[in-house]
Length: 165
Image (cartoon, rainbow, N blue to C red; front, side, top):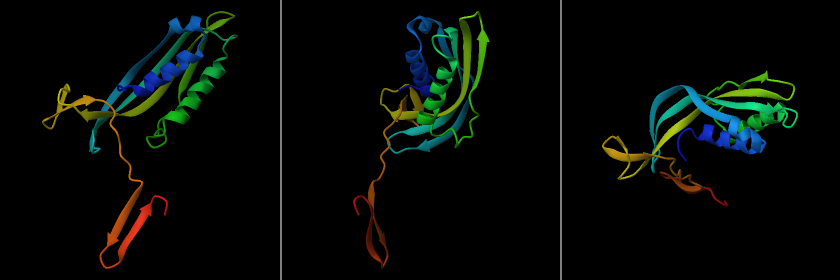
């Protein structure tokens, strides 16, 4: 998975929704990007920064009698709520859209969505990115989450947390 994951994943979802004749007139791109430097060690990899950008999705000549623009907008809203759990944390604005009629059967639909996603690195001896004297490749890394733990407090004995206790 490369960076711009949200843009790529939402583009794929929209492309699958469109009638085949519309797929050639579909385009998506990033604009107004900002690279926020925020290194954080993740153990098996690291987050080097956050990418903030506006994703623009353009469907030209959408046959709105065949595919209601409301269905496209609902798909975007549903995708965001299912896949972008950090929207609220980063206080990202709601998406914008514009419908520009062309004739009695078609319209251009433009949707803009603000995203913030991590720029992750994974150690790789052949990687193109050198940071802190270590080579990395741009990639998500596996995050290990503890499911149980033993906590020992001096003089109080040992307790278990999590698991089937």
